[in-house]
Length: 167
Image (cartoon, rainbow, N blue to C red):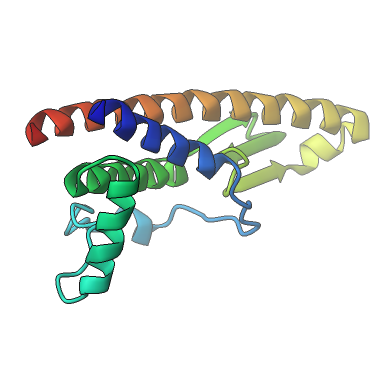
């Protein structure tokens, strides 16, 4: 029962990401992004600070209302944070770099969406650009869906492994 409620919480949390508003700014992978040091690795995400008894009480109340222990609730929050980060950082691309190229993340709708249309593509006319753009968007959406499904499966595996440690 406890495992299924954690899975349900994480599934609902992952679906909530699908309806978040999209970000209009395009984020580029940069040298700073490639050299980012994950010093703490997010292990403390979702845990209240020890100095704030109000946060602890809120977390206990939320866990109790879902029929979970606080540690199971924290596991669900950590899994959700990991999934969100993975979906935001995933990059897929489709199309042809010489004409039309679409790059996006694994969120639906995407928070990161970059469309590149070259002069060579423009020389094909509106009809040619339109066909290539539609094909590239569809291909990127399909790849994003695959990455999203893999991330959700990874989240469920993570929850399963962590639940074994809790018992």
